[in-house]
Length: 336
Length: 183
Image (cartoon, rainbow over all chains, first blue to last red; front, side, top):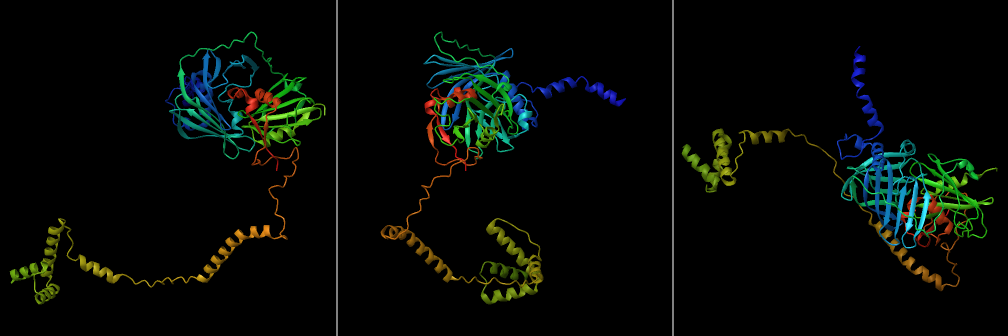
């Protein structure tokens, strides 16, 4: 009898409790319990929610390999429809818009417009999966204190990999809005590889959507729709722990006689691309003129390229060289 | 009689009592408990006047201290022996150090002048062993080999990550490839 009484007492509260547990509330500086602010996964969930549902703008500094690129950034949302906008502050001037899985980049001086289908990406700031279970399997997620970024108090969430196949990340999440104020990627030695940081940020009730109009005489690259990876000329016999296939396309590239196969892998935070195209003897070697292929680096991105049968296979991503090498070693041409 | 004793006690405090009379008064203080208490009161008044502080002590305070000191056990602890330093070893070590410094400064000159001197080791010029294409990569070469970025890699970069749009348009010419060499 007592159990039945308790059941009817809890019943009205239950839907609210379930909804609260599944969907973190929209940011609002806060009456949240202090224990939740010590839960890294809860903060990341709230951050993903805030990134999708708030209108915000500011100046972001992108730092890579000692190079600084400041850009104006804005995110607008209207009835679930999102748009990201980047505007370079320094030459060469360019404007980039991400909308419904499509990225358009207009170089102002040359009026060159590049349009790409990128359904696998969600943000220029930080690509965080909506389902954190994938990250939870390969990263330790914990809150490591508080700091001020751009005069805003922030909680520091550290994502420390449980193996040496991916890099550590730290995200400074605004206490007030749960937006990412700073993101730093560290190499295996703990050195900073890449950094994105807001130098100022404001949240608005609404922001306008910006349209990039394609110049009438401007050349553009064709769209690259997603396809099934079963169409690829290769298959991967093994993947590093936590990585899954997220996107495949077969698209033409500059000077390529035939389309290039592109398979994208991700562990939820780090991504790796595998490219395969028929060897072209008229083109300079992709390996950078080296006799012996080896893993090379462009800033934070490692890549490895070598000939496999009649194909050139290239593996590239923001992961340690061991991960690149592991994936390259497990590329198998179909039919072999 | 008491007035006379009080006056002498007061004179003793002020260092005005003659020597023989002072000795006689101190002898009397040992045998006369009342006089001893009076002496203590005078001492307290004198201390309070001089320091503007007053600490009240029990009459037997000094007697208890003395009794406790008497009751303290005697500890027979071994004394630390003074360290005898062997300065001969220190002198020998210093001599070896001096000879080493002199030898390091002079030996290279001897190598150049001596016709039978062996060729210097060319460690820095030795080539690293060629790497297997699929060997595990574990170390980063300190002196990186840089070359212009291949155009195809530039295309791959753009297709791989949309954040390259945040980089400079002249990615191709500005970015350099850093080589990693396998162990």
